[in-house]
Image 1 (cartoon, one colour):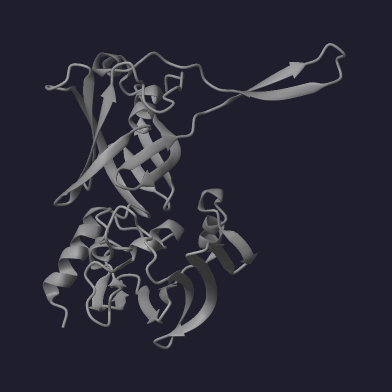
Image 2: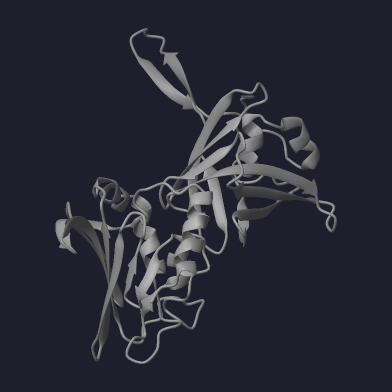
Length: 329
């Protein structure tokens, strides 16, 4: 029996942080949906409660979780034979599969397209398949389904950094969440050549917002020094740390050759800016360059009640990852 506390607390946290109804999981998230760290006996692999609770899913049992607002479902089937194991996670959702299908085509995932509804990655020790299905009947209701099949030879070490193939994920599932954010920084009290960076994500309304659009992309809106809203976008990698990288505005340059007939357009990237430290950040405050510095770093993530605190460092002599925009929006 699920207690009222088990239902209310995750719901309250989601609502405070700006729950947006929609698809909750994308391709790179599926490996975190299961764990063999807490499974026992004839159920060595179960659904990962630590990760799923952060997305607001309620545990029905070890192999079934349901979202109380969207009614999305996660169902686990595991088949163990003498030589191989098959882990199958079925994600039932109410939304179109078009966005997920597009995500599967991301080159970073290195998935082979079998057909419009089947993508795979095949290796010697294991293989991965994503199957997309429409119009599945679940509890008398029509839903779409994403089926994730992970098949591997027994004895395979999938995760070399852990004694478990599917360790309990301590990652915060940023995908499909929206937050208000504030930025702070200060000279490190311990090391003179370091500046401590902080991005605080919370429910408290600020002029700045960030939305994690899926498992790879984000978009942030901020007020510039003239009080006008500006937007930057980019990608993020959510691993042991969360690492951001922004996309920089480009300018078109048209070149006309001497023969007067051929015209070529080239993209000219912004010129690099000087090295950043706390003094440099003071001068750049609320410009595009200022925000690009913060969103081209790696951060540790800690959760405090209804807030997430991202902590990182900026080193004198190192302006961060490609921190180069030269406009002053």
